[in-house]
Length: 336
Image (cartoon, rainbow, N blue to C red):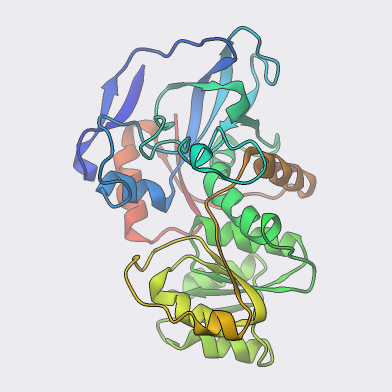
């Protein structure tokens, strides 16, 4: 079979190679992969910014959907022909996260990732995907969608009438917009591009703020909320935007810290967290239980993930380069 391997850091070292087709043992299933999607984490991994001690060669990507073409002894959760995705952390079934569960994250230094023609996984680490979704759409769910669900519903208690601020228009942010609207919440979106804000408004956002022309965007957020602030912030910027997020959120509100698009270095004054009773919650994707709950909700309302562009399997490196430009809206996918 063919698979992509990281042989050294940098996109030029991401190579398509021949590997033996995996075998399946007791409790395992073999997936014939159909589609994959990229996350910002994948860019960081390939560029050496996520895990500088990554053991190479390594197969990247956490997100992929495939058909079950072989089952090992004792498998009961899935059957031949089922279409499933791998859970981001196959050992995090339910409950609280632990170090052991976190180490099972795919494609980042633990188990190999999904960017191969065939992938073997334990049956406990796969999830049926909604039937109404195409392969590329379903492949966007394991990381970005579960992260947004965890932030707003798993660790949050988002309800109709609440207000959510999402930063940017990448995968997690657009899923947060869609899931929040599904719950009947109001969504405010920031972006550096007016055309992306227009697309976000078309998806149901109530307001868009261009943070290039309005660098003090937190002031505009408070204006839009009558001086109160938002109930939830989906914080993907990191150190560079956290201080503004703390001004944009209401007293007693929640900031879900998800990404570090502005980098990890910087100083944050913790006093507002204390004085305004803020909850700053780190969100590292989510459990299989969350994934399954989210899929039931998505299937019920027939929600469709936003796929910006799809690349063929042989052009996976070009998909990485495209995502790095930041011009995408929603998700970037790969299909076989």
